[in-house]
Length: 191
Image (cartoon, rainbow, N blue to C red; front, side):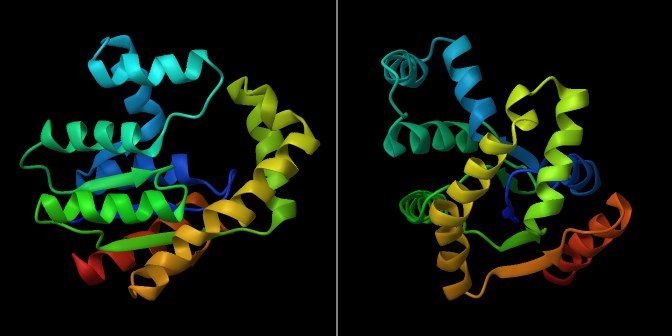
C-alpha cells in the first residue's frame, strides 16, 4: 500500500491535482471534510458525536477525526493506497495518523508539498470564488487569514514529515499538466 499526503496552502491546487492523482494511481481519496459529512449524513456514532461538537460551535476533537479516518481505512481493504487531502492539519494529527497507520501495518510513504507564492494563492482563490460559489475565497482578509493559519499551524505537519525524510517540495506554479507531471514523477520514483 502506498500512502500519500498532498500538502499545500489554500489555493495551491490540491483539489485539482488530487483528482488527477486518483485517476492515474487508483488512490482512495481521504478528505476529512468529506468523511465528516458522510458520517453525519449516515448518522454513525462518530458522526453524531462530531455533529454535537459542531452544533456547539466547537472543533471536532482529533480523536473523533482519527476514529473516522480509521473507519474509512477499514472500509477500504485492498486499495492501492490512500491520498490524504486536508489532513493532517496539526503535528498532533500527524502523529496520531502515523500511529493509526502503524496499527494497520502501514505508514505515510510520501508528502508532496505544493509551493505557491502568497500573491498567486490569493489570485487563484479569487478566481475560484467566481466559479465555485465559495464566498470565503472572494474576501482578501479571509484569504490572508487562511494563509496565515496554514503558515502558523499547518506547516508544522510538513516539518514532522521532513524529519522522517518523506517531504518533497513541488513548484506549484505552471500548467496543471506540468505540476501533475512533477507530482507523478515523485510517486513513480517511490511506488
